[in-house]
Image 1 (cartoon, helix red, strand yellow):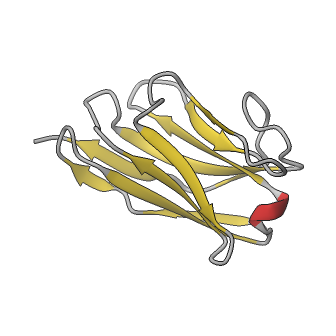
Image 2 (cartoon, one colour; image 1 turned 30 degrees about the vertical axis):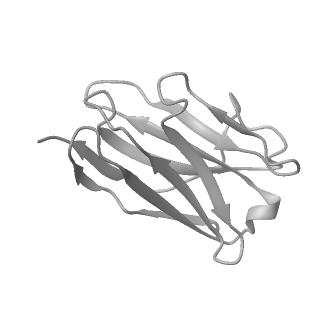
Image 3 (cartoon, helix red, strand yellow; image 1 turned 90 degrees about the vertical axis):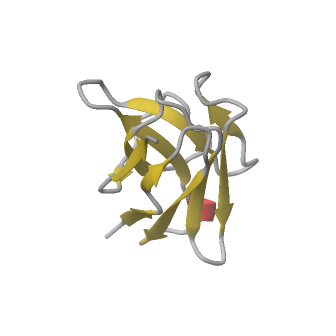
Length: 123
């Protein structure tokens, strides 16, 4: 069974930074693309960014471009979402998800989802 487990969420001040981790089991990261999504209260789920298999291309939503970045550590089978300069637009529940075959990742259906983790931005 494929499982994804997020960690690293919590409360951070505006302008601060946070790193979310996503530990993947049941698949290797070289055979699946990883996407990050978020959902604010009363809002729909939106894509944050993703990374493909193959050439490892990365894609980001305009709202987070140049502030967030995605990376992976294949030795730990873990993907990361690095968030900097957090602002009041960014709070919500963040999810990581897996897509196969993963040669594309932006705008495609994901088969496996983590449980989500809360990110709060406040003084």
